[in-house]
Length: 222
Image 1 (cartoon, rainbow, N blue to C red):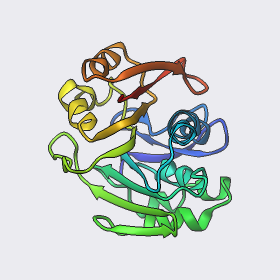
Image 2 (cartoon, helix red, strand yellow):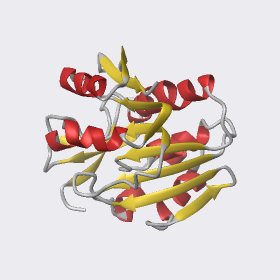
Image 3 (cartoon, rainbow, N blue to C red):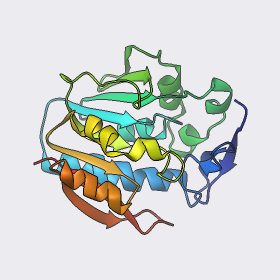
Image 4 (cartoon, one colour):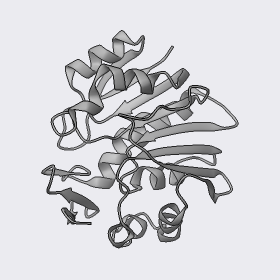
């Protein structure tokens, strides 16, 4: 894919640099450690510590490299998970086949299965993890209002690069499918995003960010 190249971040894991946006897909201070901090520790593990359910439902906006999906499988604590991910611009296999997350996390087969899974279908990556990848743009498409999710990973490019992804109408669309007690997590800590989430009735926490970033957001629907 033109304009996108693999880079090595400070923890040794890969990320991608999009020259058209002048932006990386993950923190240059460490792709794996950023995703673990924001989406696993502040999201998945936080939710599992407080809730019990037979079937955890996760929505990810921004499938990207598939790193969040892989980490979710590895840190699921044997929890059955239905994982739905939206991506407007899926990456070509010529790039994803070179990413080192599988090797770095000791799960190359799982990472390969995540990327080889068909789009627009529910695919069993393991006995406990069902993956649904959807090629779609949240700016123009609607999420089925009957679907509800326990955790939302919001992993779009930042407000300075994709401002349309951080507007109140888009956040409203996302929060409308967050179930009671559900949590929304993102690396972003912009004040307007916090105010918009609060206006939607969520309890907003400003948490310490991953290395290289001061803060992040977790918001809960009570």
